[in-house]
Structure formats: structure tokens, C-alpha cells
Image (cartoon, rainbow, N blue to C red; front, side):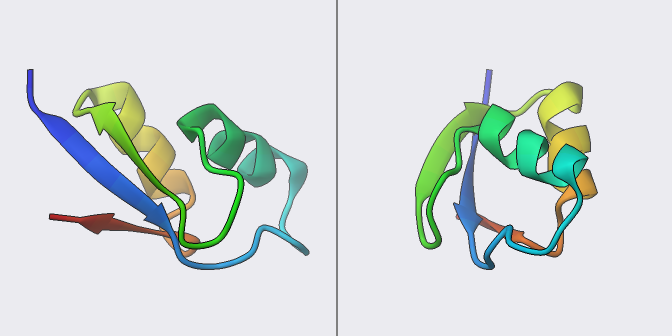
Length: 58
């Protein structure tokens, strides 16, 4: 299956706990950190939830 690269572009400080946990579930802990995940509907949903904190890169 295809993969997707996700980069954290903004701090999680000041955001609700559920959004912080979503970032951790994606494997993101620091700004500018990039992780590669399988492109599944579940991962897409997590990205949509924190779209203001992350960017999808090519």
C-alpha cells in the first residue's frame, strides 16, 4: 500500500488534549519532525483532525 509523509509544522501547546494525543498517535513529538505512515482512511482522519498543526509532504 502507498505511504504518506506527515510533518508537524506547529506546536501542540494550547490545543485540546485529544489533538495532542492524535499527534502522538501519528508519531509526531517535535516541530519539523517527519513521519511516514501507510495511507489508510484512519490515518487520513487523524490528519484531518490536526490539519492546522501538520502538513502532508511529497
